[in-house]
Length: 123
Image 1 (cartoon, rainbow, N blue to C red):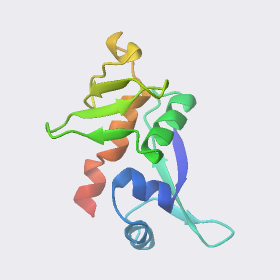
Image 2 (image 1 turned 45 degrees about the vertical axis):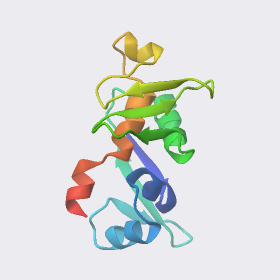
Image 3 (image 1 turned 90 degrees about the horizontal axis):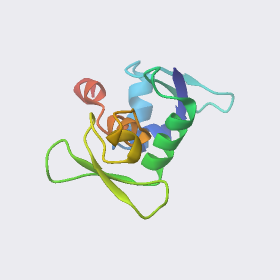
Image 4 (image 1 turned 180 degrees about the horizontal axis):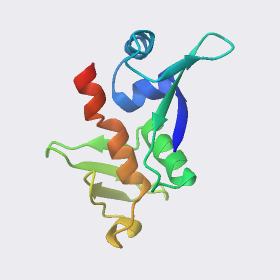
């Protein structure tokens, strides 16, 4: 599944500046096109096992700063959809209801979005 995000959304997800995203888009390091207003639109490829609603929730979680890296390498905390419950997670496991049942959850997708190792190595 492919999703398109703005340079601001990509910058937030990758923890870099908008200008960095623009430079990398211009250099061809990111899959990007310009829209009718001349702004870059970044195309991200999301694994097909995530449903569109999960992708939307993961992007919203990142945009609203609802997921944070902890001091323990590879561990995150993310706010639940109720806005009050925090879950501990890694990119492979999550303490939410879906995660405890072994299902892929939007918290894990958000964790992948904020730790894009392949992009960081290219940056």
